[in-house]
Image (tube, rainbow, N blue to C red; front, top):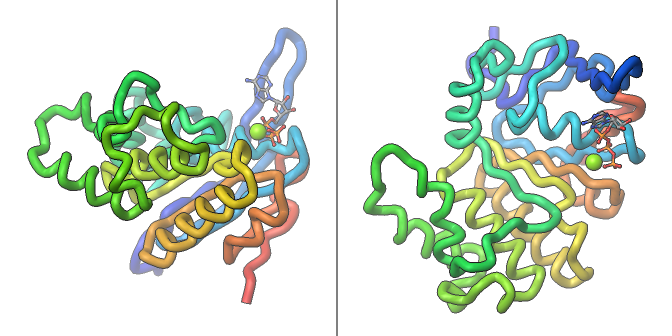
Length: 231
Ligand SMILES: Nc1ncnc2c1ncn2[C@@H]1O[C@H](COP(=O)(O)OP(=O)(O)OP(=O)(O)O)[C@@H](O)[C@H]1O
Ligand SMILES: [Mg+2]
């Protein structure tokens, strides 16, 4: 018997997209367990199902069949409202194109995920400042996103993803729009967050980026083709 549930437990997960008469089996039966505190890179050729898998892990989509448990909760059995509640409480997202709101300052962007919270959180601004300090942006609090470099924008996006202390950080090609120096900064930061205990799943098509993670899951044709641990 397991004392603690896995962070992620996918069992026989499929995701089929129906386009008219055509069915695309984007995920064709994925079994995957990820422990609390792991850092996993997911790679695979274009069309192998990486984004489909990340959308399921992030509760943005539901499996066609099979089951998904996140942090002990059976996501595939929840209704939409409870899924979105679970998503905002447990998951932080980082995307290739940052998605910071241009009119808001860096600090306001980081606080944005709390805007729809039921109760105001008086500690939130202090927490946002400390996260921005953590990602090396304490001198950029009142800047707008377009006044930051790409790497700085991505670090602000990471601070925003962490503001609700999610148990799972998901990153979809987080270095896809960055030069090599900024990529290295962002990957170092993600590595440090992992060392501090954050569970991280990162999708990339870049083997060099994947090599930063201690575990590497390879997809092909909607199936797990390989699952390697370093060291
Ligand atoms: N919304 C959708 N409707 C129909 N088919 C889809 C949809 N999303 C993905 N697919 C199909 O599912 C398969 C897997 O797509 P997915 O986006 O998960 O691949 P990927 O590994 O992320 O690829 P890439 O590296 O190009 O981003 C592809 O054949 C794709 O065409
Ligand atoms: Mg994709």
